[in-house]
Image (cartoon, rainbow, N blue to C red; front, side, top):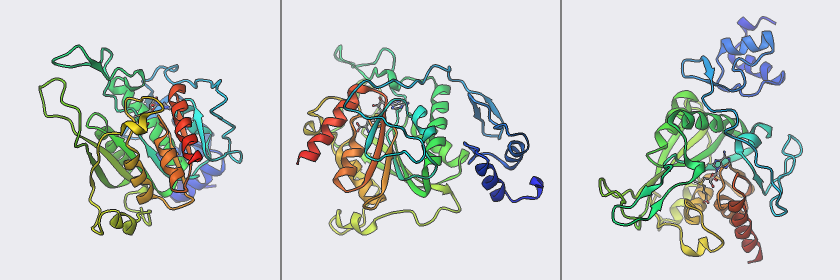
Length: 333
Ligand SMILES: C[S@@+](CC[C@H](N)C(=O)[O-])C[C@H]1O[C@@H](n2cnc3c(N)ncnc32)[C@H](O)[C@@H]1O
């Protein structure tokens, strides 16, 4: 085969046929290198940097490990292609589970990743000794966070179908990194950002800035920006949920209700109303949704309520137990 004369698309097909993974962001020269040598142009533990070269990953090798599950409640089963069942919570690191999943299986991904806003000593209140946000899973160096985001986004782009919707939560701490990666590194189509306005946001604890009362949801479509087409948007459903007026991208929704937190606390559980709205806007009945950072399982609950299939991944067992209780409660209704 004369690889130099082949079209980019055919090179990709050929590389995929020969078992190449992590290829969606490789350029033509890198694909040819793989086809000629059989070696992945980006060696393990390396990361692609924006000019197309790769460099050693900044993460230490043992930073992300699968935490083996010893719970009967949570059923991580074989996720290898052909043996991939729906409606399950996978207990462990999404960076370990995702690579074993087949390409293009999910219609949609709803991700609420760590925002990297916690601090080792927590955030202190100006007028009390209360300390908040000390979650170990939410602490990264800047470089680690970029690396982590690149790693999970790479896998999400592979397992979500072409033109499938990808909704990612973020705050100002994280959303620009995510947007840069989606838009500039992977050239994915960004449809919009949804602004979640929290009318009952907690007061500012430092008294040195405005009260933080918004989060964002980046809505991207899994295709190159100029090629993205026919993504799911249930316009009329959204309109009918908004007194028959077009739904805006600014959603005023209070913080998660205590009734949704009765099975246990999580520092960043999302209101069910928001995730239900995403599910109803961006998927159809029977669609298959992935949540790689499930926390208390809000995505699974929203998906169940609206007859969608789902798989969620979460590395903290205690959160999985809350999720399981929420799902059990729903099935008993
Ligand atoms: C922002 S919270 C998600 C909250 C969720 N949306 C909810 O409504 O409960 C992020 C979650 O990701 C989990 N997590 C962090 N890193 C992870 C990883 N590498 N793999 C799987 N889960 C991870 C954390 O334990 C945390 O529960």
